[in-house]
Image (cartoon, rainbow, N blue to C red; front, side, top):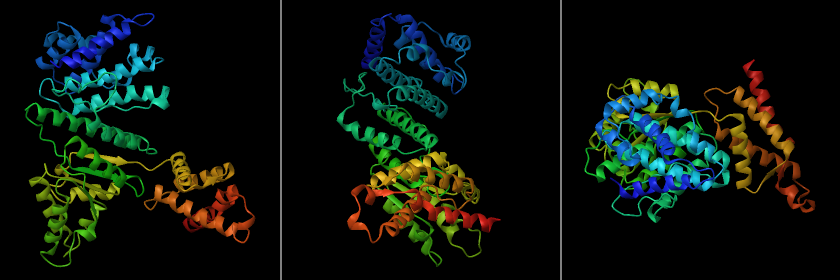
Length: 454
């Protein structure tokens, strides 16, 4: 038993008992027991280890068959339970410190529970991730200034490894900052949730290693599928740093290549090029952008040789590096089908959706702030209409964030043309401000595109 965690559970019970009106210990423990039973049911199998875990930390006397009846009685099997805020937590969201303690204890209990039977399955990790995201989303919506995300809690022999106050050891602060940095990215909500799921899975895997348990054979290689400018490279870089902090890889090195960096023009040279790239990426992350270009299907193309060499190294050194392949969704599906052993080498596919018009305008505002530029209200409204048109007209060439960057740079040029010759007489605000008319060139581009389409 983790005595520090047990103390944290008891402290939480005392916290809720001290409220006005107080929350009974048995009611709090019943709510937590429902959550833990939800996790144990995620993989469709109940075990003595999981049952004993619930008994130990919540002072219950369940047997394995009793746990099955408990799950049925409280309907904790399935996605519905995982989408409803627990009553006690929701009722006391008005008290942030109490809620933060609840969140920290729930996280630690969940992570300990799913490895208590030495069978932490991906379904259990996914259920835990979704539940924690739901709790944190509710807290963040209420207290945006205190924004938090699921913590990565490691339980070691260090008596201070788990702290229900939410404090972290110095060695974990960098990881916290990385996750906060990811949270601050505009949009990408489903992508962020997938990354958290990966973090939780890796943390559980590393905990199993620390305890001398058998590691579940799950490959770490990933597929990113999305249109240009949707943040695939940004997230890949973050994963490299996050995995390094977790201890999944020994280096935070990030090697980015495309077809030109892997495929040579002569027989045998491609294998050498691939070997050199993968040697450089060893112990870190190799990111292959537009990976589908390796499988053109053309006679005499050496991309197939590159794929074969990459596959072998991915399998032989799967504990020494993480390979992330990325590209357009449909083309990546074709790429994965181009070789019988390719699809099975990757543990997860993450889809990067196009940014919505509202998200695109937030990206534009961010670019303006970063460059000391002010966009007038009229300018923002005009730009939103332009971006909305582009979004509605989008095809495979729609560039998402790059589209916004091009639009911003064109507006800056247009502003310079408008102000030229009067610079000495302008105020600081006039020099910094982009007006609606500075986005006119973008509307003309769209009108030109519409006429061609018609």
